[in-house]
Structure formats: structure tokens, C-alpha cells
Image (cartoon, rainbow, N blue to C red; front, side, top):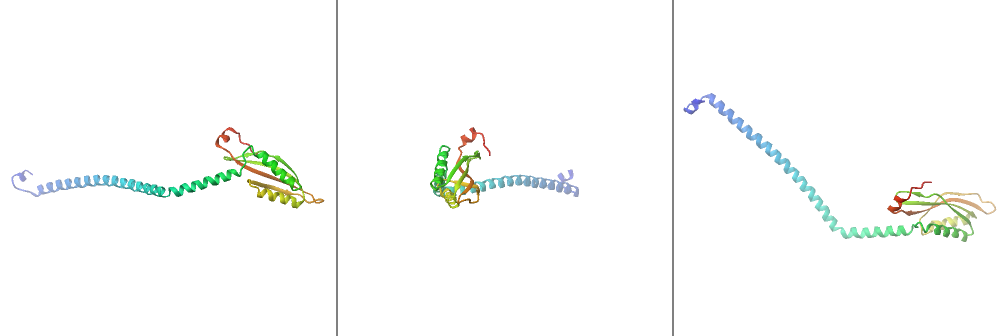
Length: 195
């Protein structure tokens, strides 16, 4: 290699020079690839975040465009909920409702007796069942059940059992249930009742 400084280049010098050039080029390529891949990964990550933000912006623009429509739908839903709640009695109205139903049966010529059963409290509603025993003609009983079905309040008839007609009189037994929504505070203060 000292001959290189004297102006004489030997094959050994060329081999060392070639080796140095290969090592330098390999180091440059390795550094470039390492830096490039790290930067490319960061660029890809930033592009993914940008795309995600663009999607969120597009969704926000759609929401802004549909705001009035969503507001009218929410108002309609609130109105429906209020109508639904209006058809459900609150706890103070239940005894009065049962007296009205009893007098409805009496007006049809039936002997009607309503006996309260234990309430069933769910997450947001209370089922208030009554055992109904009514005596009268078959047609009177059916007319009474029809009136119950047409009532403005939500009522459910279950476990219907109409006995045989003897001397023009039948006895019908069924469970008549009404419902009511329970506010969040009520469910926390009342223990659950199950039948």
C-alpha cells in the first residue's frame, strides 16, 4: 500500500481499495435503508391517522347536514314515548283503574271481583297483576274481555279459563296485568318483588 503513495498501484492495493469502497457503499446503503424504512413507517402511520381523521370529519359533516332531520326524529320519538307513558298508569292510578274495570263488568251484568297479586319489578317496568273472577253469561264475559282489550290503557289478559255454562252462567278466571315505568330512583329504593 505504501507503493500507492509512490505512484505504483499493485493488485493488492486495488483489492484493499475495492474492499473499502464495498464496505463504505454497504454502510451507506444500510444506513439509507434503515433511515428510509423508519421514516416510511412514520409516514404510513401519519397517513393512517390522517385518513382516520378524514373519516371522522366526513361523519361529522353528515351529522351536521342531518341535524334537523335527527332533531325531528328525536322529537317524534319523545312524543311517542310521552303517548306511551300516558297510556300507562302511575302507582296512584292503579286502584282507581281497577275500580273502573270492576264497574265496567258490573255495567254488563257481570259479578266481577279483582284480587291484587304480587307485583313483578323488572329493570325499568313494573307488572301489576290482578286475579279476576267474573260470573255471567258467556257473551257477557266475552263482551267484558273485548272492552278490556279496547281500553285506552295497556292491559294484558293471561291464564284465561272460562268454565262450562250452567243455567246460563259461566265463571271466568284470568290474570289482568297493567304496567308502569319505574324511574331510576324508585328501583334503587324499592326491593324487587317477584311472584
